[in-house]
Length: 361
Image (cartoon, rainbow, N blue to C red; front, side, top):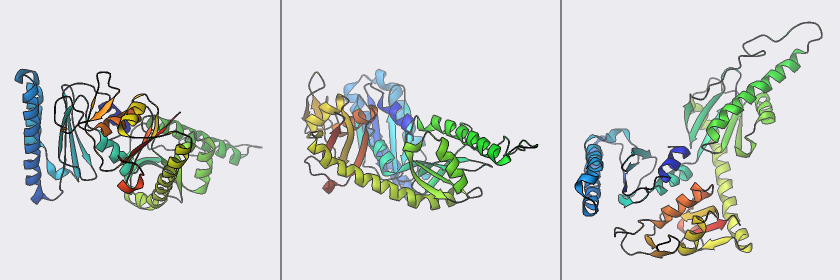
């Protein structure tokens, strides 16, 4: 799951959008139990759909749900499973942490767990610099997955790399070598842009000091760089590199989280901090949300008026016209308009309910 796929899900506005989430287990002994639990959740979704729609209108959707119940292979999953089903979209996503059992039928998909995954999983890009083969990885904690599209891995094929440097009297080979090295890393940096444009994750860079220096001179990604790892990793496997690069990346993530929490007091002093569901809803919908803080397990069903501007609480999350989780909608507003979301423990926010928004202006 990447940011582009998340935004695609969040942009869908159609009724009904069905979201089903549950925890799964890697052991084969518990796979059958997972299958039964999924079957029960799908049965609940079908009952809710049947109460609101003519059977002919939702027949394709019901058919897809039935197919899922019969064919999903739980042995390939880790901790969490999210299913998204609409008139024109069917997608199954696995997540690296447990999920509550939940069925949501709404005008949008429930994507807060995906946003949470992207924040909690501490994803990042890792770039291993080398003339022989500069490699790009997508990181999730210490686990690295190598990217083999968009030109990666890159080999230095020009002069000073696979080709000889110009020779002759008066030619300073070292100057030529350095310039061709800069050109090579500019090419790498340009290719990296196609990935960071859609998913602006932090960037960790590994390599010998010489490569790090040249890349630092030419890169347009300085604002994303959070950690460096010094050394030659040409022959390191993804597992070996991930084990080495994760400690400095983890420290950088923790520092950024602490800095984000410090912004709460500053924003309060500048009258840019908003609390309360109704006000946060309105500000986020207007695109004014810069940084949203959410307690991990906080959910809030609600209703809106005809304009969609005024949010009020609802006791029954399954009642017609009720937004199953208004917190998820707020998250979608903020992320969809370029803001960021930080998930925290319940006690870290001095607000009730545990949700606060820092405004852009």
